[in-house]
Image 1 (tube, rainbow, N blue to C red):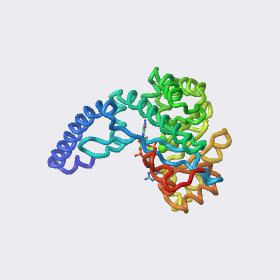
Image 2 (image 1 turned 45 degrees about the vertical axis):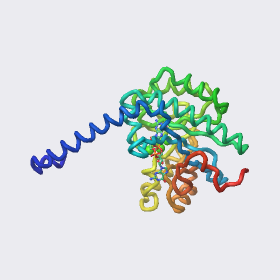
Image 3 (image 1 turned 180 degrees about the vertical axis):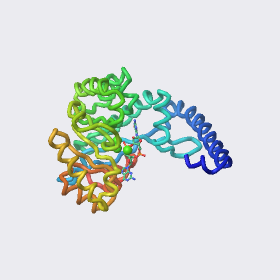
Image 4 (image 1 turned 180 degrees about the horizontal axis):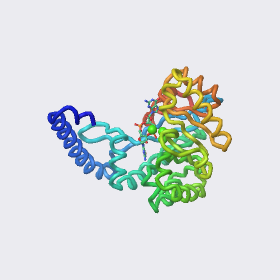
Length: 278
Ligand code: C2E
Ligand code: CA
Ligand code: CA
Ligand code: CA
């Protein structure tokens, strides 16, 4: 928008940049069509830690794409592309199958009760096959429904609240848990969420990052935790990077924490590296 006052050269610059980005996305999108079949997608897992026991209670599965020439393409780039093109449905189904299979195997190998969190995109919520995709992933892997928590963003829900409510109730009937992701970045209010069959609320990283510097943020997070508990939701704080943030969140009564301070997303083989079996 600034460019308007800066003459035509800037326009030309932006045009080239835009054109390059569009072309690059078209190439990536073509490549993404083959990513599942060519087995280029894999799942990294990040621990979710219980603040009371300090044990890992769950892991969030986060998709990674090993592009044959570009190296690792981050999900912030390819998930939106997949979302625009409906590729998200086969990719999301593939993700669920991989992650449930790997988690079920880890649970057996270490004899632990570790839950899996998996992200659903807005378009997946609109997929009429979603319910059977989830059911099949569970049946095939042997992961109990109660060990799976599906995360949906506020925006995915607000896009079509009635449909979201219907779909969430259907998923809930399978016995899985449901979480609202990135809370605070969209327009959902807690009173709207109250009517949905949710179990967990994840406070977006943007609230946690500046917690130490902002009295206002501390007040906001304290009240999100209190209100969530009042309507029966567990609270996870995302993006915890420092021990100070961890202590504040503990004081606020937050239930679970997730972030680089507790553990970065890692391949399944590294999840228990350096840990003894419990
Ligand atoms: P998200 O669901 O909010 O996942 C959390 C993101 O925050 C992850 O980024 C994680 O690596 C990052 N993160 C965790 N702790 C910290 C921290 O302490 N500091 C910082 N700076 N970052 C932290 P990632 O893996 O790059 O994923 C980005 C987004 O891509 C996810 O955000 C999610 O929206 C989407 N995504 C990833 N995997 C999937 C998937 O399987 N399906 C769908 N639909 N979306 C996915
Ligand atoms: Ca998430
Ligand atoms: Ca999140
Ligand atoms: Ca996020």
